[in-house]
Length: 184
Image (cartoon, rainbow, N blue to C red; front, side, top):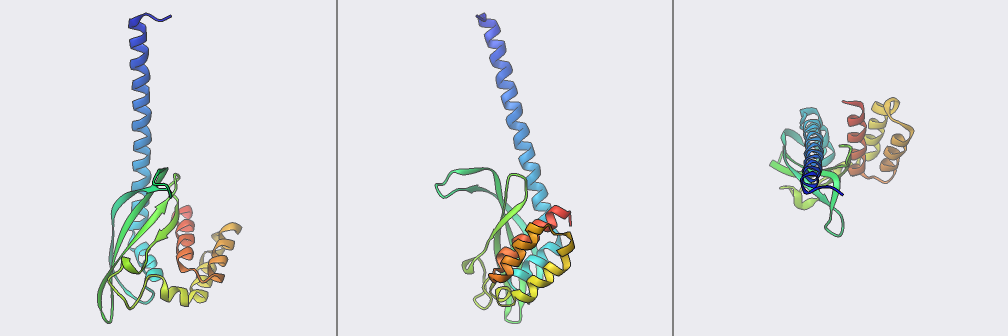
């Protein structure tokens, strides 16, 4: 058995190691969030994303404005996952607009979903993804053509499935995944 002094030292060491591990995990998590925010914050990425959200719109600017926790259907936090809220400013001939999208990332910092619906934009003329869905054969085949030789067989199949299903949102997610993996 341990003496009271030995037990106190062991407890203090265990607590210290536990806190160190928690702080290290938190720091790693913050680094992943920052890396994902930097990835999304590039002007070229904002322009591309806006092209999927509101095809034909004139890009003005975008900002990564907030990191969010991800929860499952029961409201429990999904460990290691996070989301970033991105606000896009853009124009069409009918005026200035703004759209908010939420991009979801897994524990590795890889994007896996984008949420953006009609209530997330100031326009009623161009709902998110509507025009891109209508022209996805051209858009999707252009993406596959541009990145095809750098895409894995699984990534190509996912992109082709998105094209076949006229799912511009999924094609955007697939594009973000490939660009993140390639460091573009």
